Image (cartoon, rainbow, N blue to C red; front, top):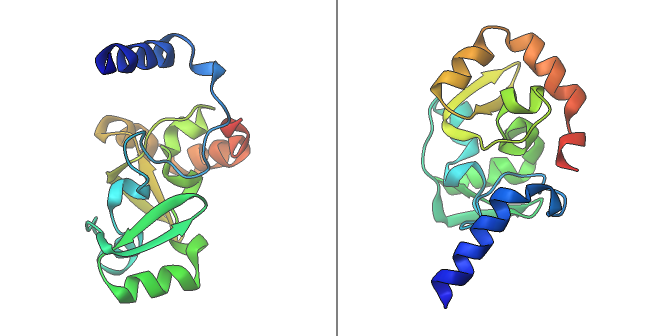
Length: 148
């Protein structure tokens, strides 16, 4: 019975995505409350690379669980969460610029003007990098309307 129920939920999600409630402001998956795919958002700024967060260092912000690799990173985030939270809640910056929501992958990222942006995958990131200022302007106009 459980497999049938899961199959029905997946089918409904595929054929009727518009019937669901407003999207969350921070991207997480159906199976995990972790923002940024469980990666430490502060590490992008301090270490210049994605670093997996540890469940020992967590903080709930805007309904999502942020994980950090150290207590220092956790403290930095608590002091200024908007500085470290990915733009557009960690949804793909290119997709938001197109007026849609798509997952942001923590392995495809860029810091622009002191803000963290995530993209869906390598191909999308290359497209986004072809006109970062233009895509950011479009995404800024679309956000947060795309959550509705």
